[in-house]
View (cartoon, rainbow over the protein chains, first blue to last red):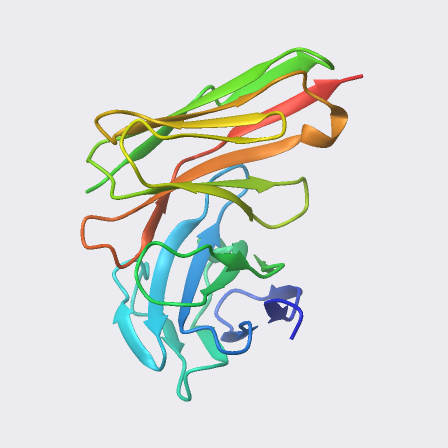
Length: 115
Length: 111
């Protein structure tokens, strides 16, 4: 593909609903990151995959957040029982290799609004 | 935990003026990356610095990595309206598994 894609681009949820956000990384990219970006802030790390292995999930705010990448390509970030404080832009990024010396390619993000 | 700070938070300049943003990490970094995010857009990679004291240039942009590898700067010469956006620095955490982004410097350029 041409770049990282994310869907949906916008999601409005009522408080308490479950949501699932999808990320399609660049084909062949080994690593995948999820970030949460609040308005006017920098991206905050949520979790990191290398292929299908979730190597770091230290940034997930609570056990309501769950991410998976079962086949090492597409990833889904699921948020259960959404709360108003979950409202943010969720960014996905992929890199061609593992480790920290690779350029991150970001998707357009999913803007989640919890009412 | 590791913290990455940036100053200033906002900068308003007249077109043609220079601009500098500074990035400071609480820990030594193996490398540092800079990203630009246009209003309504997503972060786009600008550059990576790896060596102590490294200086890299991209047209009107000059990036520096401090000798102690704990700070970095981005300088833009003769700003243009196309430079508008938020500039983020980011460095790997202590374990190198994820990146810590600074809060960003938002640049406004008045024509």
